[in-house]
Length: 194
Image (tube, rainbow, N blue to C red):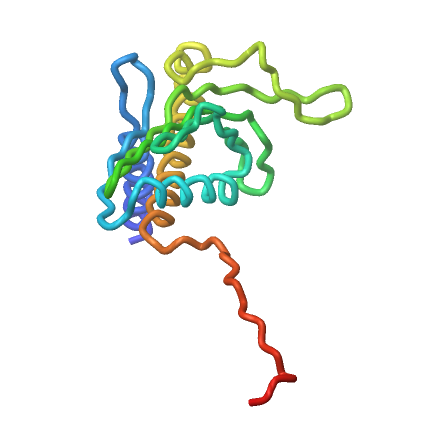
């Protein structure tokens, strides 16, 4: 029974990792891409714009929005940390930078993450983790330069992060805006006759 349970857990874990890896695709430039188009009836372009800018500033504060942002289009860059090691003794292995693009029209939007670049961390003389920018490698070339095991871990981390990014976008776009809009309060005078 224990062997059957262990085999089931292995298949479940392997299936989840394989499903994440399959969520990434290859675009026309032979780069990894996470791409989705979503229909959202009832929302206009300016509503999408306001919600998306607010979401990026609150949920993904490490992202940098491009100056070329205009109505109907937001683009920029972001990054996330990749950890390695066993559960209790995890350390930062590096970071993966990416470019994101979000476009919308009335009642639909699309978003994609691409240009994934892994940059490893290394301990400096004082034991602090420092980026090794001269060793950066795109995910398309990571398998050859870093090895199959690290490549599989990084591609699964990238797919998992992309799925979480997409879930946040979809969740926020499908619900009412969480922005706190302060209503104008009317003044009441208690000295007047009532």
